[in-house]
Length: 303
Image (cartoon, one colour):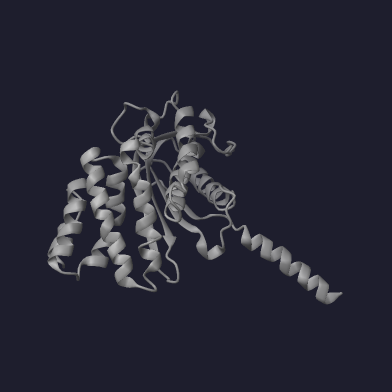
């Protein structure tokens, strides 16, 4: 009887672990720029958000605990925010990374700053999200869910060709539902780096190859390096050609700029000891897309 009970417990625990949540998420709300002393509501909100995003199931896929995507959201609220509750104004800085097969290394997938973010929040407000929907009373959750789906799109692209398509489509649906929102970050013509422009670019036929770049760079590049470093590096080097082709077709497109800002340090660490020809090829590809990237010239110099 005892043995049977232990087997049952083992099966139940195994099932729980097999369906572990996809994200290892950290959400921080920075209130340094807000005047006033009543900031407890932000700590409460921060706790609610972390609980939700670390327990919500976003996909039907099976993720082991060690396979989860590391995601960081830092919401920096500005002086226009109301510390007693009400309209909140700020910027959202986010990053995501995924593990590399058979190593302890995690490779960055996404690094981006959303500079136009507003939402309403009062202590005690309901915090909720329905998958794929935009709720004007839940703009905070809709924005975070939008970016989670973009990150999931890149994650699944990195494991199989076009594997992320359902999540980009879900992000696109959220964006479409938010067109009447008062949040400038959703407005198609508000600026060149709004959420509408971002998801439209990821769905643009002229940039379709960006999805394959994520697959070959990660699955056929980094994921094979534990067995064959040179093979992995060669595959990653091939992606520089595709990046330059997309740059010519769609100059300075957001997904390309995001790729460079996310990957420039990683590519420096990977190639800075290679010969000048290799370094020049990587540098020329990245600088054609995002010439103002900080310290990019270090790659060309090799130091």
